[in-house]
Length: 217
Image 1 (cartoon, one colour):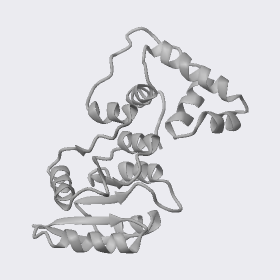
Image 2: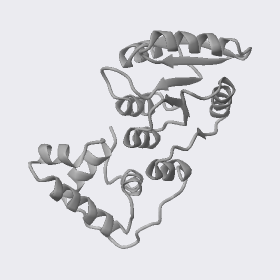
Image 3: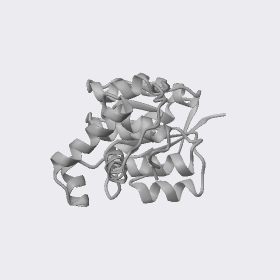
Image 4: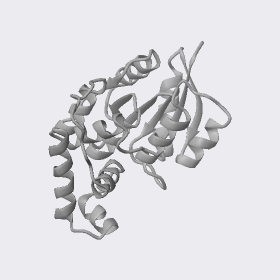
């Protein structure tokens, strides 16, 4: 049985070229092409691909929001991200929200085929970006963070800040939303890191999701 693939990319030439490339492989069949999130979810109402191959940058709706919705509504359909840009926080959020792979657009067809086959087989396939933050999350995607055994009291304001950080907002944006300064936002984040004995924002978000301090919608 052929592997059913759904391609999501807003550039027609790239999308159609990718379809031609993949369908040269005897075990692949492209069952849908989407320009954006609306197209994607309309197609998913009608067909169930074995994998979604999606560009990191799409119009109208962020890939982070799309990956969250896919993980919530279609958790059994793996997502492979293709990109030309190492957009650190966007990649991080996609990984946290269930993306099973990442590959650069300038890679070889053989590498893309290997990535698809690996992910469909139930494994992960990540070309590690140079970013230390993203590399850490990808390399330790299955790692259980050290438990904090003592009771941790996190304030309501700290939880608000944590949720907004997890949603991908900058310190400046969070400050505008909560009517506080970016420096205060950073202070709240550092307080949480200290309480939980964690080192990085990546660790913080993973811990918060794992221990249900926040809920990713």
